[in-house]
Length: 205
Image 1 (cartoon, rainbow, N blue to C red):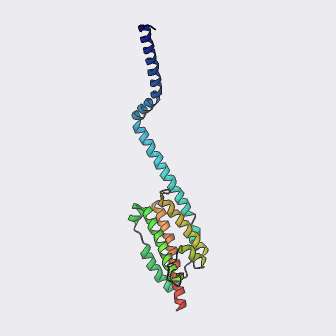
Image 2 (cartoon, helix red, strand yellow):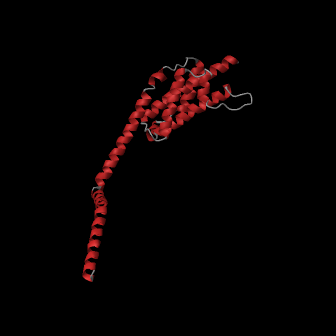
Image 3 (cartoon, rainbow, N blue to C red):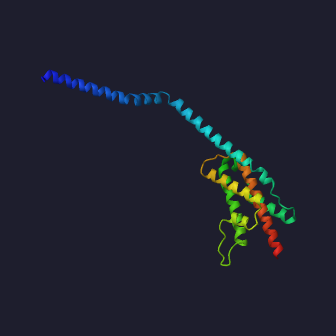
């Protein structure tokens, strides 16, 4: 093969390779150009999608919490002077300002569930601790198994715990109203357990 023919072949191969390379990178370049040109629209779209996702999670949480209202309504605290005194104490312990409810509804839910669990743990440690003084574990299920917690209370506690875990994992976004409902239901559980425990102690004295 003479020199001119060889050079022509090199040019042909070079042009073919360049064309293949251009075809390979053409679409990514086009996508990058379009993304840059319409970046504001893309950002707005992503924000709307995020907002819709948050609204959906909030709506689901509200619906789940609203479904617990009948169970909470079934929990009855017997009227008595001791119950009235306990109600004042529990109300003070579970009071949350509107500012906190609005600023951090998720935090309110986390805190209220912690108070429900700590109340159950204190009662369980008095009623269920073994002879060696070991603290009771899994307080709510164990108190339910022993008959201290009613069916309605256990159902409500289980669901409140599940919703708390969904919030902790970031899967649900509670509203201010959701946080207040969760607080009120938690308060009712705590009051019912405190009054029942006080009555049991009074009866044993």
